[in-house]
Image (cartoon, rainbow, N blue to C red; front, side, top):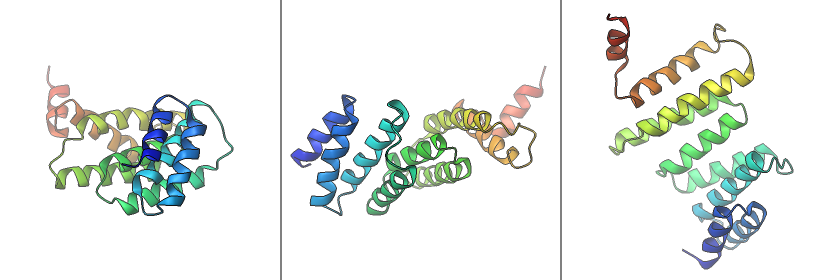
Length: 170
């Protein structure tokens, strides 16, 4: 890993998001095919947006850079999970669910457990639905809630059928 990316990673981990973005940008310019540089920039921008509430970088630009990182490293589960979280943060619930489903398929193919990630995603999805304020009875919202419940139950170690049986027994 290049020294520039290491410096950028240290800036990101210490909460210096502007500096991290600048360093990752230099790395992106120097190595346009470096997935880590793109991902690092997108993560830094996302953290800056969500933690510092800075809105000078459009969400669409952050989304493009995440997608570039995922294009360059198609098998990186971390990139997909982070992009899905970003989508939720932006209120793009259907896109986030699609990305979490992609993460789930990728993990299944590689026999990598992601139940904890999907369990956390279920809570984030419900939180995002609450922020949208359309109500849980809205027909558009119900499939999102169903997916969140499936992941929540799976994160507890149950199948949907086992959960229904356990909840309906006395």
